[in-house]
Structure formats: C-alpha cells, structure tokens
Length: 398
Image (cartoon, rainbow, N blue to C red):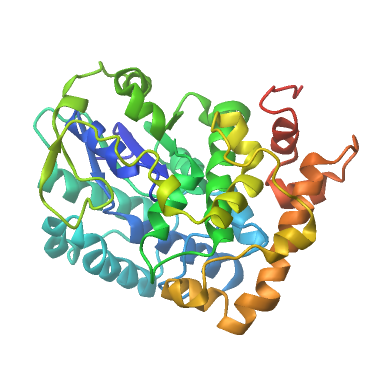
C-alpha cells in the first residue's frame, strides 16, 4: 500500500445512502470499500486544521463544520488549499487512534488491536497505515482498488486528491427531506433543521464544484443520487466503475445487504437493494419541517429533480420566524453544546439563523443583476455557484 495505489473514497451527508453505496462497491470482486473506519481520522484532521491555523485545540467531539457563518474562514480556506502531508501532533495522534478504537471500531472491530502499533507520524502516512490494516482484515486476493466510506467529508476530497494521485471520489445525494426524516426518528439525537439543510447544501455545492468547476477534480469525481441507485442501480453503478477503470459486476447488486438505516445494529441481511424507505419521510416529518426544508433547499431540490409538497410556500420573514424547529431536549449532545442552551436556542440563535436564511432567499430570488461577489460567496460558498443556482442549472458561466 502506497500513495500511488488505486483508491476510492465514498462520501455524502449521513443518512444519504452512503452505507448502501459502499456495500455495492465492496461486493465488486476487485474493490474493497469499508464503511466508516476513518470517521475519527477525518475529524482529527479538521481539529488539526484549527490547531495549525489558529492554535486552538478543539474538543474531540467537534464536528466537521458546514462553514455557513460558523467555524473559521481561515480554517476553511486552509482546508481548500492544503493536502494531508502534515505531521500529526503527538497529542492528536493519540486522540485519533483512541477515538477510532472506541467509535469506528464498532464498525471494524478487527483493526482495534493493531491500531495501537501504528507508527506513522504524518496524516498521509497514518491514512495508508490504517488502509493497510483494513485490507489485511477485510480485503480479498483480487482487490485492486482500496476504499473507504466516510460521511461529511466533501471538503476534504481535494486535499486527499493532492495527496494520493490515483484516488477517485464518489459523492451521493439524497432528497433532503428523506435525510432529515432518517435523523428525525431518533429522538434525543436530532439536529436543528438549519444544521441538516446547510450540511445538505454544502454537499450539493461540492458535487457541483467537482463536476463542473474544478478541472483538477473533474476526471476523478462522480456524483450520484440515492434515488437513482434504487431505481436504476446498474446504470448508476456503471458510472462509478467506469471512473475506477473497472468493468461493472452484477455482484454489486445481487449480494446480500444489511438492513437500511440499521446497518450496524443488526446482522441480518436482505437480498438485493431495498427501496421501502424512499418516501418514508412523508409519514415521518411534521408539515412545518417539510415546509422549511423546501424553502431553504428549494433551488437545489429543483435542479436535482425533487418534487415539492408546497407549491407556493410563504417566504416572508414573520412567517419564517414562526416556523418551529426541533425542540432543544431532542437535540444530540454535541448540538446542544453548539447552541449553548435552551433559552439561546429558542430565542437569539433561532432568530439569527432565520435572518441569515432570509438574506440568502432574497439574494437567490431578487431581481438585481449586480451583486457584491464577497457577500454572495458568504451565503453560497462561491459566486459562480450562486449564478448557476439562479439559472436553475443552466450553466451560463464563461
């Protein structure tokens, strides 16, 4: 295993079908794609970015940020421009390996013991060392492409591409209402609606960027939709095997799959790809959550071909303020920490975020033809992406 090895990384927002997609790839006789062994490795790299740029030691529970008026612009810029060829501070390596053993080891228990003997002192070296452990535990003799699946790390794909010249990347998108519904069922571990929709929009942005606006990534990246895997798996998976330079194999969809949404809680397998949960969100989500998702994700949803339940949603500020979010008591612990407390969450925090979303809506649907490029980039990551959204997918960028 070395930097020039053929690799694949699958990512996307959690609950978007990343595990299903990684299983499909892992069924291929020449591909190893292990789900979730390196979540804590990538979170550790994000903590390193804060330490390197701002000399701040973030808590081990700090999430991978969507950087929409949160986190640090300087840290985000560093991530966009760097690679993984950085030394790991000793304290951080210890944290990463301990967290992998405790959390990611639930998914890949065979690597827990050998993790303690990892000798790498750089992020690129540690990635290769862990990938080698995964191959020794789960790889097959015919494996020629070595991969992992990790959610929430879209922004880290280009740094990885700079580090590993033969690594390819797959991002999966899913109807945001279905993503939120999957999370919404777990009372006590929910996210604020703004976290969900911004993480989803970030994933859409990076898929657009790597497919349309980044020549370095364009031939090393493919984006797919969960709904296409369900409805036409062979055609969708062929896009990925073509990217990897491999022939499509029917084994990718004909082998057994773990049950949807409970991949690590049960060991029973089902035959083939299950589509029962595709529209489950219609029964799970309250109307107000559906409405907010369609308002805040509407432009992206339209481009991606998702239909709406609300034909003419109200967009005025007062109406948005009155729409309810998940209550504080149902939020996961790390979410409660980020919003400070119940009073702040239901008051100032909620109003501030409604204000941000209202400005974004006005920018997106306004009649102006001239906009301050820096202002727009704050709300849409990149000015060209904003223009693309305004044109509803018709790419008129010079």
